Amino acid sequence: MSSADTSRAAFVAVDWGTSSFRAWLMAADGTELAESRGGEGMLHCATSGFAPVLRDHLGKLGALAELPVLICGMAGARQGWVEAPYLQTPTRLDALHAGAVGVDTDGDVRILPGLAQARADQPDVMRGEETQLLGVTEPEFSGIVCIPGTHSKWIHIDAGAVVDFATYMTGELFAVISQHSILMHAVEPGGAATDDGAPFRAGLASGLAAPAALTNALFRLRAAQLLGFEQRSDGAARLSGLLIGSEIAAARARFGADHPLRLIGAGRLGALYREALVASGFNVNECDAEQASRRGLVKAARQIWGARF
Amino acid sequence: MSSADTSRAAFVAVDWGTSSFRAWLMAADGTELAESRGGEGMLHCATSGFAPVLRDHLGKLGALAELPVLICGMAGARQGWVEAPYLQTPTRLDALHAGAVGVDTDGDVRILPGLAQARADQPDVMRGEETQLLGVTEPEFSGIVCIPGTHSKWIHIDAGAVVDFATYMTGELFAVISQHSILMHAVEPGGAATDDGAPFRAGLASGLAAPAALTNALFRLRAAQLLGFEQRSDGAARLSGLLIGSEIAAARARFGADHPLRLIGAGRLGALYREALVASGFNVNECDAEQASRRGLVKAARQIWGARF
Image (cartoon, rainbow over all chains, first blue to last red; front, side, top):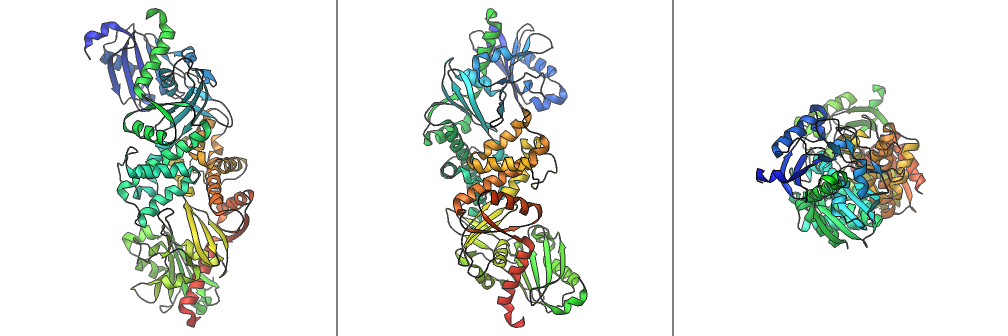
């Protein structure tokens, strides 16, 4: 992007995750003017500091010192830069901006809160996804949103308010099981949870059909290869399908498949989930994950600094 | 045990697992005369050799060179000492001895086979547990056997024959999740899957009630602590209960709870399973795991070398 564009800059949008940093110089009309990304996530900054990382990226963006900065994600966690306490469900998404916390640093820097479901029977938390939800929904949206990933989130939104949500450890289980359990012998190193084809679909069907027998299905992956029914080269795709199928079966039982579903996906994983969700009877509308974050930050920024836009 | 007893010795029984070695000097009447144990399991011996380890333990037992040796477990795996090919289900347990494979070494040394369920829809394998099954069942036993552990086994036996079995990765999932996932923050280091009390029972109830939502229940363990509903000191017991509950719910759905159930347990884990199984409606009869192995080896040895006993 040309640096000439930066004269139109209205604010800086930042998605500050556990292990990644992404900042965009945004125009008042929501156009992205420049981007700066890096690996300085919360885990990195918890020891090295947050302010220098932000300053560095603002420099790369060519952002003027007086531009306000709005941040979402783990920078607002207790172990982050400044804690932005969770908003509790049920909560309207267009109330997110009211929970933003100012940072005592150069300029006007604010961090959006995460959401907490403070119910003893269904406790759950999110940080960063709430901003994506704001980005992909209209003010009175009702339906389900699915955000796949390390910790997949399913969210029930009713007339613009988050009323229920649940996290499934799908991506993280894929990683720890394929790297640290006996299934390391059944999954080729570097095999990602993004393979497709027949082995993925077979694993998916198994997970969808019998989510309650997941810990048995995991061992069957190993036994099937020992007995010559399956190939190690298909192991990663099967494991991925099995875990995604288990997630979708559990979420469908909890949230129902009769709502419109927005899928906030990225790359190959997003495409796999779309295929799996359609096969499971959902009516899917897919949105790009980064665009969802930016749009959410723009909406909240307009509510906070509306007069400047 | 006094070495004077060794004059009654009829054979040596060996349970040679993945990471442990246990040998017993046995009398013809099934009495244990001496014991020798060590950490030289299959993984150790695959590089250092099996014969010297056996010789060393036979010396410690005071066993005469002409005594026959019967081995069960991973020493018979493909990556073990000599492969003892799986017997395929359905198979009678009193046919195990017929699958024993002789080892080309000093003396008469034989390894019992494992069992394979060579069905594309329910592939499964065991090595070592088949000998425990032989040990704890009468010739025409019908019912279910549960063998908890790293890879918990549930076995349906009909009139002395194994007709169906399934493995659940319960113990291994406890280990990899508590050591390598985000739940390392929710489980105290060294917390074993053997805690009891209210947190175990709460996790158990959750796993039994909703086995299909396991990957969500795992994340809830973390969220409940973040939100102050639960304590980290209870995390290991809750995780243990959750995984055991999920296993029992899935196994109950597959095998039914209306059969007599033999539990082959050891120590605290055996007691936890007994409590959990009784709470789940099973009629439980508990047997000690090591005794089960020894009794199975004695039964098979009598079939092989009957004339000497």
